[in-house]
Length: 206
Ligand code: FOL
Image (cartoon, rainbow, N blue to C red; front, side, top):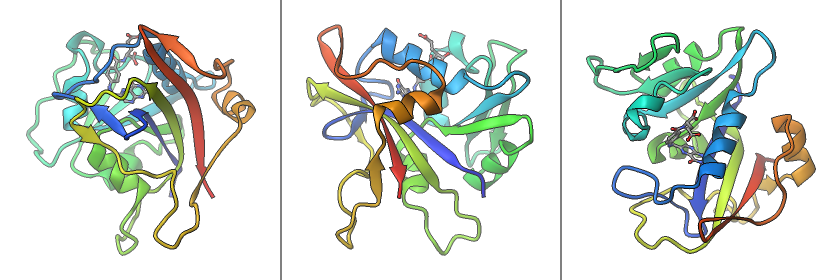
């Protein structure tokens, strides 16, 4: 099964959203998201796989996300995907397995899970009985260090701590490994934007 990378920005309490959108507006952080998910070798592109609510949370003039194959998951097979940009492909799939299959064509370089919580949870902790589990082996986490954004109303499961068996399943990569994987010079250390401090991190499943 093909590799999946989760990309997410989360507070220390793992908050990621509020009222159906992002709790913050950080233009440099968003530029990092756009660059990481768009960077691919000549002649290939990446896929961004998302749930229906995440699709709706992207400003209408930015969706589908340009230069990327957009795959939206909805159990409603009649869901209307309205596109502001006919030159960027967007597809509807009824489940994650079909979405990953679609995003595994030869011209696709990397597959990113961009939210929301149910897709992130499903790929962090796949049900092993599932016939075709879709498992994420890498998380590009932007850790929002301060403030805590207590108004968050959606949270991802904690993946970086110890598992039930007591061993850590995830290990943080070094900053050099993050730079190498992305292929561009990601800023190191604590970043500051509009009074918010955050850090670009990469985590790997051991
Ligand atoms: N991961 C990270 N690191 N930060 C995020 O903000 C983030 N957001 C989502 C998923 N993973 C994330 C989901 N929400 C856009 C808007 C919301 C969104 C994802 C993307 C969006 O408009 N993206 C444009 C950038 C436009 C700009 O530069 O302002 C894109 O082209 O990617």
